[in-house]
Image (cartoon, rainbow, N blue to C red):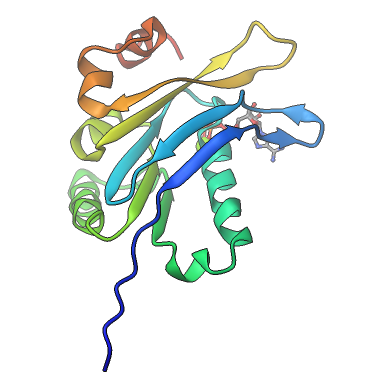
Length: 163
Ligand SMILES: Nc1ncnc2c1ncn2[C@@H]1O[C@H](COP(=O)(O)OP(=O)(O)OP(=O)(O)O)[C@@H](O)[C@H]1O
Ligand SMILES: [Mg+2]
């Protein structure tokens, strides 16, 4: 019997600009999501985390073969209703699975992002527009996001001052 190795995919978002009908929900997103790693998406409610995740999902649905070979795992707050022990088990599983997958996880739990994510995308809501608009404020190595963020909004968010 032959063994098939399926490579996890890199996900490249180039000027991803999600709309709901005529309404733009998030400012254009440019980011490369690496294979064999966990990428966390964090940010306050309404900043567009689920929207961006759904866009990635749709991209993969439209590339027929990617559904089979894509090896991209997208998770939207998978631990939100779980106790700490179950949360820990999920986190352990994700760290194991990242050897074979490209994993993107939306989480409100910043400790979780810090524990398991290699890289982190931080979104905020721009409320200076006619309608709230999600914006990717920075994407970097997780450790950098939590210890020396480039954008002052990241520091405010992770310290609980905005959002
Ligand atoms: N089905 C939809 N139709 C129209 N607008 C939507 C829809 N889903 C989300 N939105 C809008 O898009 C923006 C981003 O919403 P989204 O659900 O992606 O945020 P989120 O970061 O996942 O928030 P939360 O942390 O509460 O889950 C918000 O302004 C929201 O009102
Ligand atoms: Mg959401």
